[in-house]
Amino acid sequence: MAEAEKGSDSSGGGGEGESVKLFVGQVPKHMTEAQLLAMFKEVAIVDEVNIIKDKATKASRGCCFLICPSREEADKAVSACHNKRTLAGASSPLQVKYADGELERLEHKLFVGMLPKNVSDAEVSALFSQYGNINDLQILRGSPRTSKAGCAFLKYETKEQALAALEALNGKYKMEVNFI
Image: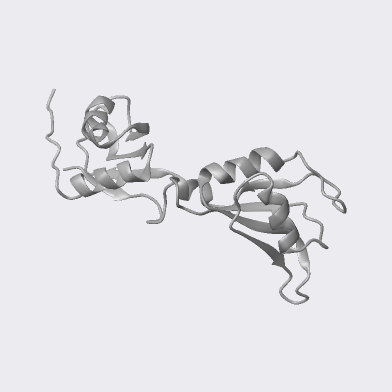
């Protein structure tokens, strides 16, 4: 039996309408959230800027988070600013990166369990490609011919494709064992 489980946060995905958090380092401590928002809005759509402050003194720690409405807008901010712009009062160029865990959250990854030990990549791909484009498939293997744990990870192009596969197959599909 093949069972699929969502491998990431239920708000995961990367399509339009889903906010994405970026971390920005090398921000001069005198800059305000409004100034940073205006600067980043020149290169991408940014919904929010949150300066990271010291808990005791409430002073800027020289970094902030940006919230962009989509991965596309976040990518614009990264490509326009990361290591490309040094702000007055900073010693190094801006460091603009996805916040910890954001890239993993944005992936449309499913865990598939209860696979037959001798299942092939082609068999798993044929089953799951009915629901969308598979960007990556990894069957955990003990040897070249057998699935180590009877499980796999696969990534879809979109969140909707991953959810469609999950809805159609999770706990509802039994993959037959082929004895060769």
